[in-house]
Length: 257
View (spheres, rainbow, N blue to C red):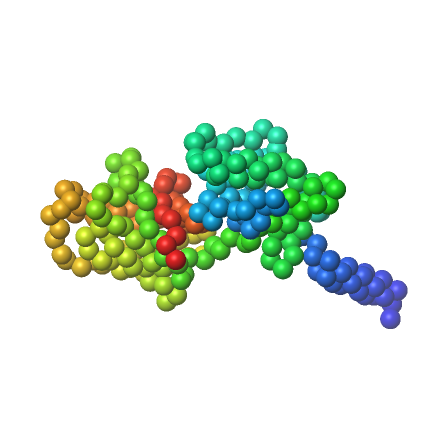
């Protein structure tokens, strides 16, 4: 065997050994493009209906702290990570227990100095190696999930909630169909998802007429039209945002299963 061939084989063998060692040790593959839901926060019992989330992309981490939306810059190299400074968040007030959890979560994020992914979970570690937060991977696929709509775009540059006495629902089946209630009638359509990209419709609905509450039929038309404008989907914990191609909010929903 020629010398250069022996060197190439040796380099390949070394690369394979190092890769195997990294996999065995749980070494990270990088955070960019990953999304997570908080699974544990040492010293705190989590509030199930207000779980914080974290999505890492393009040098920023953003999500919900359980109460408010937040965004902050982050840097990562190898297994090291640093979040902030110069973060920002909305300023909504929530129940005291939720606010306390949110403060502890944000403190854990800014304390993180290293990370590792083990058995599909993300661990953030302080400079002394102590685990400050553990996350489960955010499920991105919609098939097999059901949602209750909390707001939709009415097509007149306004995002509105469902009328009192009505329920707007969406269920994505494993066979590529989406169905639910449009407030009066049931509807069904096809959907296609590829990563964050999502397309829906057009929808077919039953033909019942509802007189109450006032405006329910107009709401139904607007909601089904909003579904047809969807181009992307992003789930964060129990919250789902469906957006148009120009990133306008089309539908917002919370998980019901």
